[in-house]
Amino acid sequence: MLFFSPILPEITLLGGVQKHFFGYNISIKDYNFHIWKGDVVMKIKNFAIGALAAAMLFTGTSVMEAAVYNTSASRLPTKIDSRCGITEAFLLKNTRFDVKHTMTEKYAEEYVAPCFSRKGIYISDMEAKAIAFAALQMYDVQQNSNGATVSFSAKGEADSGDGDYWLTTIYENKKYINAFISTYDELRTQNAHSIPASKSYFQYGDSMSAESLQYSNQRIYNLYSKFENMDSYWAPGVKLVLTGDYVNFRTAPSTDSNVIDSLMSGEEIAPLEGAFEAEGRQWWKAINAQGEVGYVSADFVRVAC
Image (cartoon, rainbow, N blue to C red):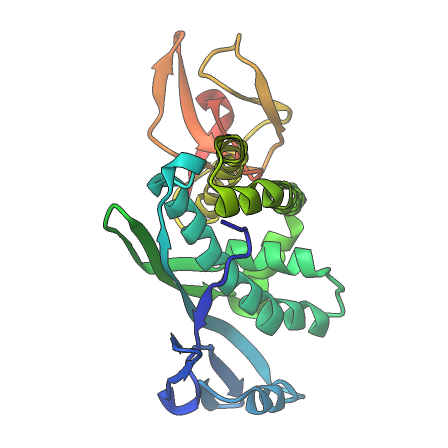
């Protein structure tokens, strides 16, 4: 098991033609753009990059509306091996992340980075990935397990909103951007550390390597869970908006529990369940922008869509 395991993106070529590369079915889907010029509406769908670039050169009264980016990816069946921590639960998180990561890299390179470049804003490759990961929502998820292998596939869609407002909103959430980058770096480091044990285990099958790999995979599993929380944080739906500054985000619904984060007025968190009572007050269980699960007092939040 490796972090950047081979994932084959489904790529839709022009005219809906599909190609098979190295025995794999690969398809690519790209953008749907609506461009207004005066009273004329031009719809560009599944155009080549050159045509897209030409469309972006419109000047004067041309204004680009919301762009919808579509892509998809799949992870071929991966073998379960509980002895070294590659359990069904681990592989479901691993394959889910890899599929989302594949689509994220494509979206970041083809749309997010050029979008900010046109605005005269420089963003790093990792910032582009963080924005793309948040904006790209997975749907039509297909995950299968037969007790021996796990496979996963999904489609991704991102609607940037008028004037790419949504992408800018994500970019301005520095708490999320920094958390994504640090978690990504930590995952990369953990995978690098697991390589010696992984090589030894698959070559010799010894118990010491299996135990070492199991320990590494448990830490990696927790990082995959954090990425899933970040995914949920940006999913459309009800949000909780902070109404005060320096509000404690806690490990449990109790004022005696540890503080995970300090939340500021206007900051949003994503609820995981309805408000409930504990210790004589109302609490919400939620996810913050750093992908952490915690609890906040209902006295300091309001519900918003």
